[in-house]
Amino acid sequence: MGKIILLNTPIGNLGDITPRVSEALKAGEQFAVEDTRVFKELLNHLGISLNNKRVFSLHDQSEKTQVSKLLELTRSGDLYVASEAGSPIISDPAYPLVVEAYEQGIEVDSYSGISSPVMALELSGLPPIPFHFHGFLPRESGKRTKIFQDAPYGTNIYFEAPTRIAETMKDLMEADPEAQVCLVRELTKKFQECLRFRSKDWPEIHDKLTIKGEFILLFYQESESKQSFGPLKELASEYLSQKGSSKTLAKILGHILDRPTKEIYSELAQIKKEEN
Image 1 (spheres, rainbow, N blue to C red):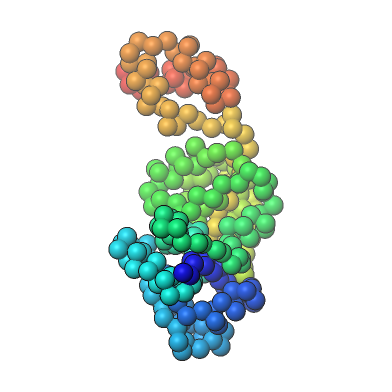
Image 2 (image 1 turned 120 degrees about the vertical axis):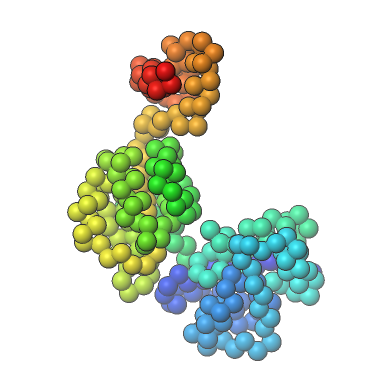
């Protein structure tokens, strides 16, 4: 019985490939990949022959039946799993395969390599502990603003497309003008760029920035006490509608969120005002 082996591939610079991953690409016979065309191009760039290799597709829309078929391949040997670039787990489609592998008692291993969220964190100059990786941001402005308002304490990391980065930065600027921000793009490539600024300075930064390539947005939430009680707001509204005491609720929420009771009380008063 073989095992599942996750391969972390370069995110832009082929020089980042590790000897262990390179050897696996040469010796491996069974591969499940996010994009077969991109994978074959990678092998071609590395001078690795496709002879005696079977390459199967694994993508976000993969059904459980396809995952099961891929796991069947481990009966005849190891199955190597790779995404287009970076980790096949980070915002890529290998997670369901790994979960099902563990369910079936199949061993899982990982051959480490470069990871764009970690590299972005290293370049950001923002506090590394704690950090939170959230993947891709939603397309809707309102949802992004809420995410920024409710972001946890620490450095928060997001992927964003070049077509939406300007609008996303406006949302962050509105949610927290003083946020410490780092914006990176084209990691490990020729035009790699890393910009550090306060979100309120985005208009000036925008004029200097080349809007091209994949972006990673990082910003630091300085204090837990700055956070709104976002998801608790509906419960608070329900409590108040049932003639619950605003002062008591403010004390409870203040304790949970580590925020001043008076501050919470003012927000509850605003909720009451909006509903009347």
